[in-house]
Length: 326
Image 1 (cartoon, rainbow, N blue to C red):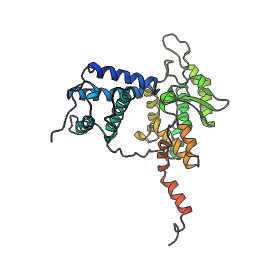
Image 2 (image 1 turned 60 degrees about the horizontal axis):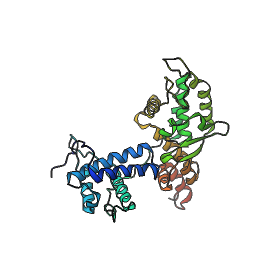
Image 3 (image 1 turned 90 degrees about the vertical axis):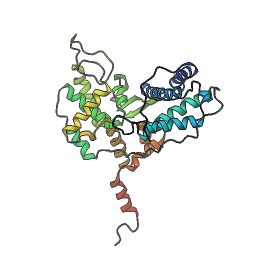
Image 4 (image 1 turned 135 degrees about the vertical axis):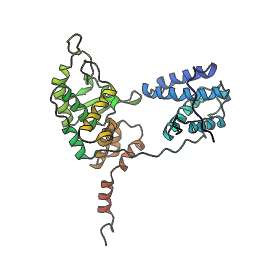
């Protein structure tokens, strides 16, 4: 069977569909409080859905039936790239269906549709990935990779220490302002997904690295054009005195990993995984780790309980009555 190739992007859909998509986006922002990155992802997925509806002659959501949504999922499965391989993973297709369901549920909630045509359409099964946490020896080696005592080295060490100590997301880290850090009490105020604020503890090693950076490295980040010290409120600055971007932070972490042979294994999110995994390995309550990471549901945190075979083996050996019998 011939596989489908996604058509080029089309202009915004006409009429009622375009208006409702716009209203749905406002609803995501105001009512659900989703972050800008999440809203952008919804927008991309729903534009693809709108193109599909228009291609099938549907310009009003009231004309959408369950078979239409099922056909859309089949369409996503059939898309291929130039190499003939599927364009979208199961996770991407499942995410696309989540956006479609959100849109139709919004229409139902607003009284625009009598029922949700997507409610009974099944999403593809997404294999649950196991986070590839570092072990504690690798973490120590990583911190040892920062040997530069200059301003950039002080900043980079503080970044690595904060990511591992607090488990914050990279966007949360680069979004930190000076007013969010309380070194005396050892806490930081983090703005998470959906504008949800939480307080995270900052361990002694991370506080020490931050104190060194804030007292020296950050103050020497200057704007070349004026030579003035930066007046921005961001904790982490680039060499021009502006707020460090997510991309630049990602490169700093990856570069440190390459220096100790971790290569592509290391990313800011791997340090988040490692923070959660090591805390659970050392007996932390899963609800505490959930609060630290800013997970809305404990089921999201539970994935970290599955990543330590050595812990599983140790508990088994100590608890099973026949573990050591010949």
